[in-house]
Length: 479
Image (cartoon, rainbow, N blue to C red; front, side, top):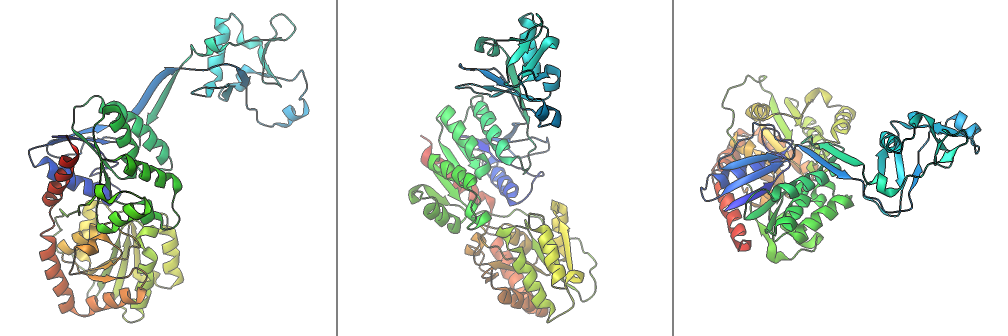
């Protein structure tokens, strides 16, 4: 079996848990020996590696096409409202082509594919009509006029001439989460549709909303079945303030999918209830962990304890509850420091919150950490806290446990469904979080108990098991 897989990131170039999960899944599938993978990312960096896997990059979208217009053409040049223009708007007020250069020329028509052409393209048409562009002006009505014969004469540009002009679109992917994200996902889908026609495969597998459009496009182009993998939903990321555009993309992906994989029952319930999807095609397959902890011994301040938060500093991860709990712990004990590792839209707000509570001298903000830096942080941590408001799964607590760090996780997380030896609290209960932190740093026997039992549990969570379940889903939909 061959799988065409779409993902937005892949290690070592990642921004969060999505890339880590994709790597675990791809490695495990590739090691089975009975299937191969074509993994398409927006941008290939060249150092992505996995067994039996080809990495393809959208990298640059380039398309050359001819202008396609219908009728009723009128040329309008948007002008900046300068005082000179405002004062001289009469029947004899004109603007030169050179002044219009670098501005967009808008072609108003009953129907068209691309409404913008450059002033330089108009110049080419004029030269072809044997009209000197230097004699041409735009009047206040947006018409092209020429003064070659002394009196102004309106120039007619027919749609047949416009349609001969070729336009090249170029778009280079960043492979990151930028403000231009919706444009990138749309262009990525167009490239993936073309790529899907170049490869032979049996099933399409798209990870998270960023690639659902690509999955749908590939399915429509090839007729192959589509699996979408829901690592998070817009309800997890935004709570009640759902971004309608992302919601629509997610729902469209779910409705077009032949099968849906969710990373927990928590996420499965959201897909079924919030997106109105039939339960028969939604399957829960838990993530696993493949993390080699740093065994190096680091020198820590004597009698100091370190409590860690690791993740995107956004609404979903509940960073404010971590800071509130830290404040309460520091009212009871002073020999403890807190680390908030990560970045996000609430980063600066959390720094200000710690300052307002008067605990900045015991708080450290690291920004985003690379893989080796995460290993270092876990190696010196005494407690890991994940107070997520809605966490579809949560791989980082498993990485902490493998690093001999006891964990406190919210009941509103998928990992809470499978990790029994962890302290579980409601994300909003800062008193319970503070009590749990205090207990783990104050009583070594309690901490050691959760570390020992937790490590035994985590040993059973293997990506091979995850891959086996995914292949079962493939087999259900592949004829």
